[in-house]
Image 1 (cartoon, rainbow, N blue to C red):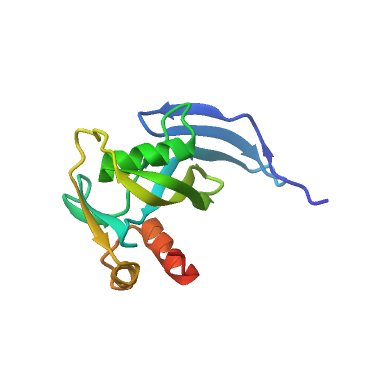
Image 2: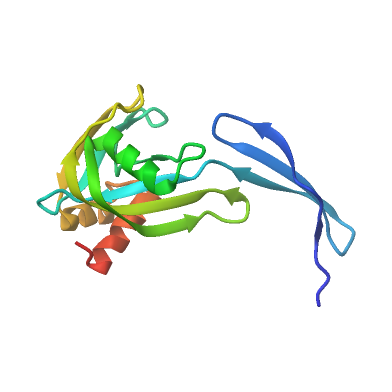
Length: 177
């Protein structure tokens, strides 16, 4: 067996509203010492929701970081103690005003070794009006869009969020309607 790096216990060095940073000392077989870091954040959900006309509910959402409106799909954080499927239903209601009769896990991602962030994506169908108040800072308009048009928007670079673009790309190629 190869000699491996020995990693000490991780200690929190920063805890913010969303992110927590932990560090640990690592000793390599050569004797070199480095610091390993892990950033963690609460899990999040994304929703690929289809209305009764089989259109994907895209959103135009103002994003403060970019100071402009971006194309997105409904998404948000999983609250502490909340199950991802419940968070998906809540986010869908907050951002689109619809509740889904059917929610099915479509995709799961664990972002990797240095970023502890789990992302769940659900397919939502059987939508019925059932709005919940969203976050005060959210400025969102729902835009029902055919899947082929959404796919074209991905290919044209109009949907800039790479994760959301991938989900639409995957959905389109799996021919899930």
